[in-house]
Image (tube, rainbow, N blue to C red; front, side, top):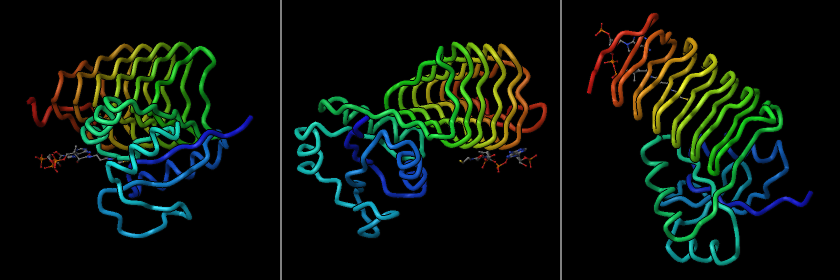
Length: 211
Ligand SMILES: CC(C)(COP(=O)(O)OP(=O)(O)OC[C@H]1O[C@@H](n2cnc3c(N)ncnc32)[C@H](O)[C@@H]1OP(=O)(O)O)[C@@H](O)C(=O)NCCC(=O)NCCS
């Protein structure tokens, strides 16, 4: 299969991870990273260029795909919406060592990092990060721009709202609902539903900010 050209937006640590995920799977051919404030001319051997209006326009006209490689959920969402309004199309990046069930779906602009596992009938929305060695069991629903950090394990029938962030090494029991833009601290265990925009930490998790 011939690889498709992709431009990354962003040139930081998360972009490095995305570059290596792209290279592992050979679905995508990296054209460049675009950044508003480039700090170097190369990132892991990929050209870093200024994220100018002209550069974006040229990439869209050339039929290149985009991938927004920005770790912060709200910023990734904002940048993705702006690009979509200009007609950009988004790549889905799945590292070669990730497992994605044939009955799962993965949206555009989402990355599935190495050794992550996506179970049966699970739906992953657009612009999500399913990070290294995270697992999501059957019938999960992960809404757009959520981030499931490395080593987090989510049981069956869990819904994660848009833009929510589950820190490194969390556990979530079956059937839990996590509200949109909620934040769960590293190493936490979620045993009850949590509302939108609230912040939870610990095992079992307690609320430290209800807003
Ligand atoms: C949850 C988190 C965002 C809280 O940050 P914060 O709002 O700055 O909160 P604070 O550091 O002021 O801590 C507030 C309280 O929560 C506790 N707390 C914070 N994070 C905690 C965690 N992960 N587990 C248990 N308790 C935690 C603090 O000890 C403190 O408790 P206290 O008031 O009894 O002293 C942050 O600690 C965290 O866990 N981030 C996850 C980062 C991550 O995994 N990123 C993935 C990158 S790939």
